[in-house]
Length: 174
Image 1 (cartoon, rainbow, N blue to C red):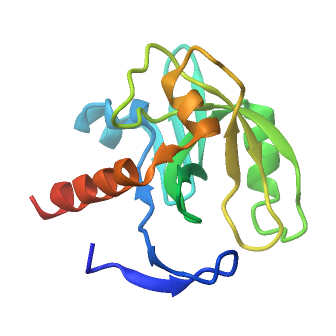
Image 2 (image 1 turned 180 degrees about the vertical axis):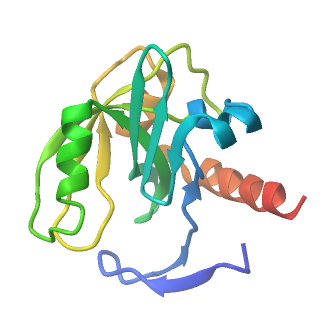
């Protein structure tokens, strides 16, 4: 962990590592498309938006942040994930993307499969836009049956957060 930057925490006045966000470059359903579907299909992907136009439906996604509590540390483990929105919410978010005063809560579905968790379906989320030039933050709906949601609200141990970050560095460097 020596390669990480450190900072002085405003909450506890101790020095902490500045952890990188565990980021996904696209929604899982986009990653599952073939290269031909990505090139010649009706898909669009940039840093903040993704649209997948299929013959039977159109899926709309935005990039958001998710912060998982870490037990015994002031830092949270940040994820850069994607959520799917309804067309109405997606259009509203798109139209207000550069509006620094736009604050609203949308309903969305987590659209990435986070490592270390089994996903048989998606997790419902509140998508909360923020003032300023920040990505929206997502908060999972309470679901006592899903291990990720349990960990989100209870927190994960510091060693687990460090293991996930180390795994990210191994993945990047391999």
